[in-house]
Structures are given as structure tokens and as C-alpha cells.
Length: 426
Length: 131
Image (cartoon, rainbow over all chains, first blue to last red; front, top):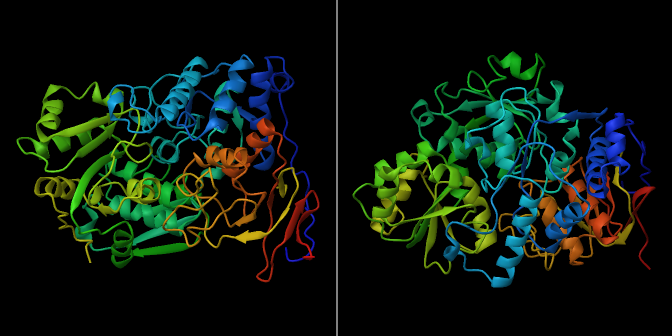
């Protein structure tokens, strides 16, 4: 720029539409479908997609209330006679419908938020209300084309499940669900899934088994790799889904990561060559000192502890059982929140729910403590084991954060002070 | 790739973000104020500015917050992106369709000496002389 900068290619590739696509675009299925197809075609145009691809499912992020525009959009689709064309799950909303008393916001906002939720159900979406749709019984398999919103779900679908989705924003995920089509570009294609940067771990072996390595490394990747697709070398092959969830969620909140590979761990990275498709790509090294610095930036409040919030993204059944084992027979000195889905919570069993009750846990379903007013006025720092929560909560809630492992969160809750003993504390 | 991602026209002061910004969790859609405490421009407002971002960041909810800020008249007048960001395109495209606004989104690089005011239209993005 700096002077005239005429668009050098006003229109790039022409998107080739099928007769059925064109029929949708031109109103053959009603004005709602036409509006949705207009957005899908726009995204195909800007991403250079040669055409559209069928999807087998969708996950919708737009059911969280941000203002009237969300309602205006979905109402426009409902009024235009649209319905989702594929099985479609819903992300967290602003309300916990199972525990409505937890909500401390205005009645006006709650009414609007509920209306937005109802409108999505009217379109035929399933009322799952979770940011971790990959924990639901039906989830896409390797190579399956889907359209997912919610940044942590997107990165999990691509990286851990091997399903294929671009990074769809609110509105776009729903437009794909209604048309059953997505732009055939980026992460939907073989070529678009190749790793663009190698991340080598230059980290003390004894640290690699620590659970905090995953959120810290993820946060570093988001900061360092931009929109690129990293391939990580050096992760233990036994790493579990919950650790990969923490890594991906952190990377997708500190940056724009939509997919990562980990050699020997993720489905498209049996070897480094598989991940890079044999291409030479730059190498970044991450050191222990880098992760200590990230840990510091995520919140080091050592002050009085006001509350603890874990389960961002939503806690899995395995994480709930792990937490139950840590807290059984103990009591929290501060409010302790666990965010999970109604599906996971409904299946964990009385042993786990009994342990949570005994400790004094407040279970939050359908929503999450960092996106809606649940915590109220907190005296002191809020502790979390989620890099994503630590990243967003200061802006959203105006709270100070202390970041730590699940065990540190529990120990701190019991003593009422922030207790840190992990190796990343400088 | 086409550089004019969403058609429209904008003229106003340039605001350059050195680091990417997630609108969701990063901007108050009522006022346009940047609320992300980790962002260097925290406290400044994107309202009534032509906004340059190297690329988008973070939440897929940003499309909603961008649309909501435009609905409230608190959003940027136009977006200049260092590289394609589909979430920005989505939020602006929907807001323009629902509310009849003409907020443009364009991909262009800024040279270091670029200063506002700036004009963005079908011919690209360029500095205009202040009167």
C-alpha cells in the first residue's frame, strides 16, 4: 500500500457450482437456504475453492448470545423456511438450562439468549450445548468432511479425529449446515492439511510427562505459528485425548491454529514426512524457558484465592473421574466450578457426582464460567487449569487469574491460597 | 486470490494493529473498545476507524462480535487484512446483508509510512490527503 494499490486480481478462480447448488443459491429451496448458500459461495470465492463439497455433519457456535445480530441472522433463516440438512450439534450458550439459578446476568439478556437457543433448535439442531462435541457418542471419523465452529472443536476435529473442517466462524457453520455444503478449500483438501512448520521440543525429559506441558506448548504454538499447521516432534506416543484437547484449545485461543500434527500421535502423522507431505518446512524450537515464560504470562496471582474454575473446554468423563479421585473426602474452602456437558454429566455416575457434591463443587452445564455471568463478585484470584480460560477471563470478567495443574487447583481450593508446585514456576 | 474480499467503501482514520486481535473477548461490541488486556492497543477504540490487522486470531465467535459491533455503529468502517481471514469476511458479509451497510474487507500490505486518513473501495486501499 502506501500509494495506490489496485486489486491485482479482482476475481480469482471462478467457483463451479452444481445444478443443485445453483438452485439453492437462486431461491429454489426458499430465501433462507438462498441466503445461507450466498455466504457459502462467498467463502468459496475468497478461499479460492474450485467448488463445494458435501458435509456429513456440523457443529454450530452461533448459539452463544452476543447481541441482536445473532438473533437477526437466525430469524432471517427461520423466516425463510430453512432447516439444517445434516446432523448438527450446538455449542455452549449463555445459559445453563439444567441449573438456571446460576445465571447472574440481566433478565433481558437471559430472555434474548434463550430466544437465540430456541431459534437454533427450530432449525433442527440438536440441543447438545457443548464446546466439546468430540466427547459426544456420535463424532466424525478420519477423512469425514464436516463444518465445525468453535475454535477448540475445530482444531480437535482436524488434528485428533482426522475429520476435515475449515475454521468456520459464527454464521458460516450454520450456512454450511443448512446447505449441506462447504467450500472445497484449505483443510477440506489433502494438500491443505500438510504441516507448514516443524516444532521441536528442546525440553527436559522429566517435564514431558507433566500435564501442564500441553496447555503451555499449545499457547506457545498459537503465539508462534500464526495460521500455520505445526507438526510437533517429541510428544510421548501415549498422550491422551484430554491432553491434546488442552493443547489445541490453548493454541486456538492464543493464535489462529486450526490443525496440528504430532509425529507418532495424530492420525495423519505416522512419520514427519507424512505430516509435511515430503516438503521442506521451517523448524521452530521451543525450550523449557519459553514455556516458563508462557506460564508467567497466563497469570501468576499468588494472592488470596477467590474461586476455582476447571473444565474449559468442557470436562470429559475421564477428567471428571480423575477429579473425583483427587477430591473424595475433602472439602473446598472457596467456590469451585466444574464446566461440562449435560451428556458427560448425565453419564458419570453417582460415585463421581457424590465426590463432587462432597467437595462443594458447583457443576455448570450447557455454558461456561468465562462467557456468561456466573461467578459474581470474586474476592481474590480465580484459579484454572485451562490456558483458554486464563487467556479470555481477564478481558471478559475482569478477574485476576492463577494458572495451574488440576492437582494445584485442588490443593489451592482446599487451603484457600494459591499453591503452586509444578516445575514451570520460575 | 482476490484481494477485495467483501465489496464496500470506507473512508476514515487508519488504525494499525501490530498484533492480531480476536474480536470476541477482545472488543466490546457496544462501544468498539479493545478489552483484551494482553493486546498492546487495549483501551483504544476500533469504532469509526479503518482497521488494519495482520491476521485474525482466536475465537470463531469473532464473526458475531464483528457483526454486532457493526449493527451498533461501533465497528470499524472497513478492514484491511495482511492475509485472508474467513472469520472477518463472514462477520462483515452477514452484517452488510442484514443491515444494509457497505463495510469493505480487503487484503493489502501497509508500508511503514502509511498514515490515515485512508480510503478503501473497489480500487483498493490508499492514503488520502487530509484537508
